[in-house]
Image (cartoon, rainbow, N blue to C red):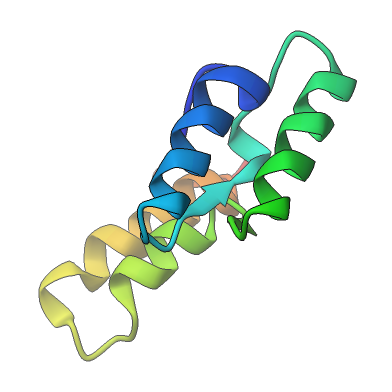
Length: 94
């Protein structure tokens, strides 16, 4: 899940979804709040109810699962190269 503010928009939704029986994952490195303390408090509150923290690069990796899913491996690889490794196919490393 994602949201505008970690401690308000995201936390309330993630807590309710967890309480409703959903397994909730939050990419904590792409959400934030108006202060670091607010972000950290929101993450801590979600962790208390069982929300699972991940990082953004885990999201496409988990969706891809493995290279046997050949219909999506090209797009997943492009995302990793362009955003995680900051590599442009025309320019090389950034």
